[in-house]
Every structure is written in structure tokens, then in C-alpha cells.
Length: 310
Image 1 (cartoon, rainbow, N blue to C red):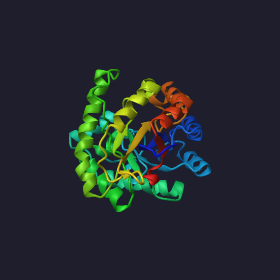
Image 2 (spheres, rainbow, N blue to C red):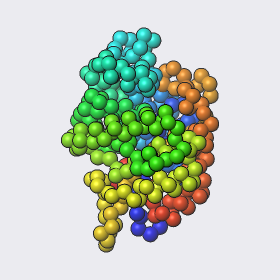
Image 3 (cartoon, rainbow, N blue to C red):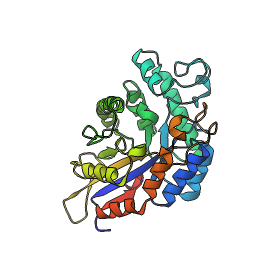
């Protein structure tokens, strides 16, 4: 490939969720469809996932989870503000509602985040190369301050800022998801000064909301890449092509490939959810492995990489 116009980290989220998701993510990595993974350490197949990452030399970071399943920190599993009466996290929307009502202890959030990093190190033998949030919890008010402190204290260099160019002109996203994504973007924009203050880095551009599930296709990926390439590089990860003043855009594409979870197999303590059992997981896997996608990367001079390469 000629000199790249973009360095793209393609991250397979939810590694460790179940054996079938793990296998699909590994198959995708081996086919060149992803270049990085984000591990759920409270996932039922987290140990298997870490072993697979070591075996196949897959770059790996932490998918910090405060919304699904059971906490990692033992002292928070029975009685804490982070769990419901059954000992499970409050859920994607339940966590947000409890936060809005002022019911969550940020001290307990910090304990859990540090416990998850500790388990990650135990499983992998090293710190995460990056740390983001399952269901985007890391950019929420109050949480982002604690998250940034933990990431900075532990010198984890990179995170994710979910602000996607072209999102609001995307015709195929339904109204209820547009509303959720708009709030995610607002929270992410508010998190930027917090992350900057703590010296945390992230790629210039985030992609993945417009290409999720059945919305992933060669045309939708091409559209997303076009928006990203049109972005003006501004973050500290940007670099210039050697011998030229043209900046190289850095980007992360969030994806969720896998084989659909079997009922009652997987999850983070409550069994697999509909998202993981959906045929959408295998659809993403098929598109990402399609030689046409790799040809598209070559055509647009997009080089896949890990966070460590930015």
C-alpha cells in the first residue's frame, strides 16, 4: 500500500462474553477484519478470551463494565449502590437512571474499575493497551471523572470518545436510537476536557454507531470512512506522512462480530442478552471478513493497526 491516509484501529468489543463470541472474534482477527479487541473481564468466557489473545498475539484492552452482570470487586457483589436486589448491575438504562437520581457511589465505581483492571492484569499478564466503557458508561457525568483518574493513575494511554461524524445525516438509524446516540455524543463531548486534563489520548475519529449489526455493509463502511477521512486531525495521535506535510487521520471503528450466543451460554452473570444471541453478530463477522472490505481499505489507503501503533 502507498503511504496511508488513515491509521484505523478496528476493535472487536465484548471479547470474553461467551465462547462463540470469542471464536468469531478470533476468526475475524485471523481474516484481517479486526486489529484489536476489548475484553469484558466479568464475562463468562474471559479467561478463555485472554488465553486466545495470547495464543494469537491479539492486541487487547479493557471494556470496563458497570452496567451488565456481576461486579468483579467481591465487596460490591452483595450490597452496593451499583447492584440491584439480585446482585446484578442495573443495566444499560437502569445505570443511567440511577446515576441521574444520585443513587450511585463514585467511590464504589472507582473500586470496581480498579478491580476490573486488576483482573485484566491477572488474566493477561500486562496492563490494558486501552480502556473504554461497555455501553459507553465511561463518558457519563461523574463516572468520567473517576474513569479518567483510574486510567491516568495506572498509565493506560488510550480511551474511546464516541462522537461519530455523519451520525445525524444517517438515514437508516431509527428515532429511538438517534435519541440515545445523541445523548452518548453529548456525554462524550463533555468528557473530552476531563480526559485531556488527565493526559489521556484517543484517535481523531470514532466510528461504529452507523455501521452496527444489519447496518454494516460495504457501502455503509465506505460512507463512514469517507466522513472520517474528511475530518481535520486534531488529537495528539495524529501524525504526518514522512516526507510530506499531509496529516494521517487516526480512527477507531467499533464492531461486534461473533457467532450468536447459545441460549443460557455466556453473558456476565445473567446469561446472554438478545444483542449477543442475534444473527447481527454473524452478519458483522461476514462483512468484516469480506475481501471487498480489505480491498476498500487498500483503495482508500487505510492501514489497520492497534492502539500501540498510533
